[in-house]
Length: 330
Image (cartoon, rainbow, N blue to C red):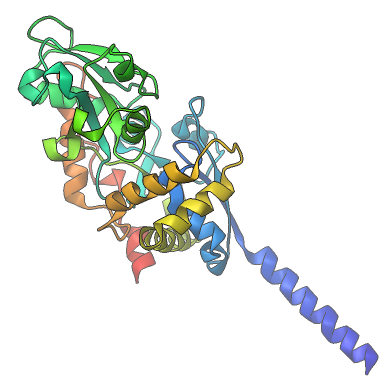
């Protein structure tokens, strides 16, 4: 009897080990550092949603010296979180990135200005200095100025573009009348610096009709021709969207999960809870599937960047697919 029990125990352990080995490895490269901007993925990891889909997911934080497109091109990740302008630009240059899901329905980018400068609307921009992020983040701004007919080379009729670092110093130090901010991050850094909301005026790119899609999930095209990879990506997207919807409904708890995963210890509880609350507004309304109309709007914005458009030709429908989200949602 003892021998039988031992045999059964060994068999059970062997079975469990086999199940553990059956989990598929998948590496996700984030666009930026660990923060609530990526809460859905950390929630899916923490709550076991990936495990339920037989996935062993590794989440790699980004940073100022990490280019997600280069990481995935070099085989360092299976999936990357990227903004569509950067993804389409890389695709046109030869990196065959494809959008397989779009958890963020809305853009969080905006210009934040001090009211004391006298800026009340876009008509007041000429003659001003505006802080703009570069490294691919300038494209919506350049498109907007092009549509407004405002030159970006300075002068009384144009705007002076200040290449802004990923901070809010130019506004605090009065080096710029307006700066680039995200609704969920830098805007609140301005508030935390002691400037009140009543002292600010904001222009959301979403409201101006020039918003481009942010924080989509991208893979290299060849993965979509492999049924095993398609199955793995389907399970990943399904679990990730489950994580995002949980985060939307439980912003405080989601923020705490993010903090638990922040190895740097740089994030604060107050800032992450506030960020998660704002991010939830951007993921609201998305079931993970890319809206073709949002894709088209982004493309047109990128094509209309004046003399230096982000992309020179429409990328076509090959730049995105519903194959993964259709399977994940069924």
